[in-house]
Length: 323
Image (tube, rainbow, N blue to C red):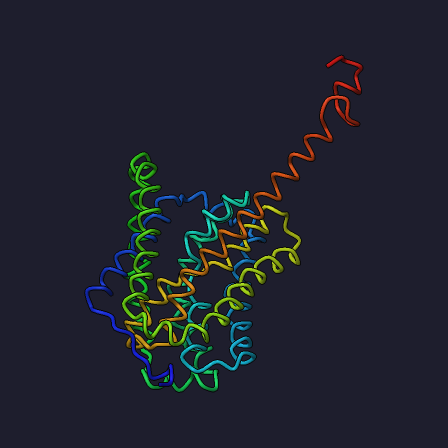
């Protein structure tokens, strides 16, 4: 059977559970967001502009070209485009911290980008999807309702985000205590949900994973690489480059999966791409963050040895003070 004709099994109750998990993710992000995060962007907008251009313009455009290069089927192409049009995921902050990047910048970028994507996602998906030679047929077949998608996205990510901001403003101590639990519970819940969804459709997943595996692997690598290259070309320092790499490379595939079932009837290629992306994105991100952290520790250790007692440039050695 053509993957464009495959429909995954998914109950309405499961969709409600997914939306709750996604809302909790946004609630957790908002609990860790303060007005100073938005002010910081206004004071030093260069990094934010680079990150937004990479996400909003470059990533969907490069994804579009990648689907043509790989010559994947329509539903897989549309799934890749959907993921590229999704907002950044909150695990980008965790990965930035692990990689010893600029966490404050990561928090600011995620907060600003998620607000923008409430309005941008439906427009971007409709634009790129309608241009694609095979995916456009699927977009027309479902008669994509942009206003309904906008409303759903607002209810899923916008409303919880506003609620979290309000709680952070009114009860900052309570928000600080709750935020770590909200972040990790929502992340574990999302991973568990994706695993359960794939397990419930295991036969379909195994039948088509060979096609999707390469597409998602390349797509994820391109997204992470695009973030890094954009930041490097923009002249940003290493810590900012790490933050932007994960901001662009880590997408909220869980939201994409929810939209697949809400607006595309659980279309096989789209659902498998979004589901597998949600798992692989975490694996690839953790691997990169760990390697980056090890490299930074080695560099710091080397710098400490070179500036140790008696080394050139050591203040004690220069002043003749005995160690």
